[in-house]
Image 1 (tube, rainbow, N blue to C red):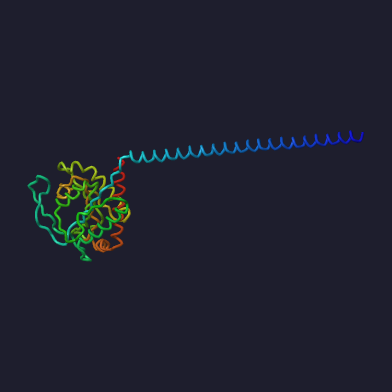
Image 2 (cartoon, rainbow, N blue to C red):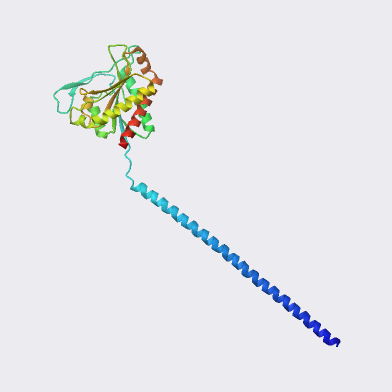
Length: 290
């Protein structure tokens, strides 16, 4: 009897151990399945993220390609060419040239400029200083600037000056001058533009008028000087030979004691150059939008 009981007890123990081992095995299999499921889920997310990233990269690449394509397909914007023409020289040029193409009327190339009533400063000196300052300011804004001359000793004819602008196909030629009068009280700035008298000036009159008004109004507003207005002229060789828009600024009167001293001041010349640069920039940009 005791042997039977011992055998039964042993059998029960074996059965219990077997059941426990089975449960452990099942639990391990379940854990592995769950781990595999989690791992698969993570892999799926990572694959999705990776796919999304690739999609985004592809989209960004496409955008970049499109942007490059747009740039390449956009017509290049022509850089604007401004010709700056400092008036007069340190010597007169009394040779003569036709006042306009095909004209029998002859006019001297350069009769010389004015002189400061107080400072005795020659006009060509003021013109050159302001012109060089203007050149630097315009180039800083991205304009291509061509000078008709860079030395006071260069005495050019007005046909030659006009041909420089024509050759460059300039967007604008600005001629830099100072004024003089028999009246010492005359003061302020004026703008001269070509009158439409021949084939050349008829084609450039409207644009020259617009540029002239805009530049003059900007200049007198910024500097704080008298506005003497825009005047059309038919007797200026440099205008009559021009095939591109051209204006001539008279920056003030060397015959006026106060303006003479101002025109010979470096600070005032800086203001003049800046006012002219701002006016040119405003006029050219507005004209380009028309």
